[in-house]
Length: 164
Image (cartoon, rainbow, N blue to C red; front, side, top):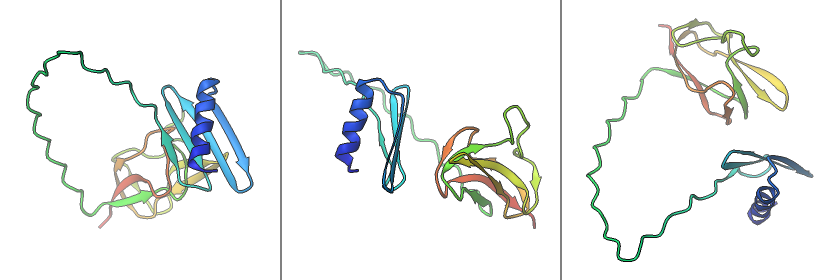
């Protein structure tokens, strides 16, 4: 399936107001799920494409005089990189879950001390729940994904300050 076919498929789904669609042809699997104004396309055999409809831009009126805007505020300085932190990354593409079930307390939260092999979260992929374990002992400094968020392979999930 090429980009032109994907574009035609998305246009057709928008025209018919279809919210979710899945197609499998041989080793190519395409899943389209619309949420509000955005359309996401996932293809397991090809790179991912994200099609977002462009917002309409109003044309300036004839004879309109441009108004000078205030100068932009200086950009805030970038936060210094946290040196010495270990990143726990997702080994698979899926959906991040911070707790074993809805309503249950999260496996870990910022400030918790974890040991090697301790479960940090679950990543659901193709109806399989994969427990993601800590590969280092230390303190959870940051949680970088939110509950129910789709995540990519290699995406950072937690930052841990290793024990000394």
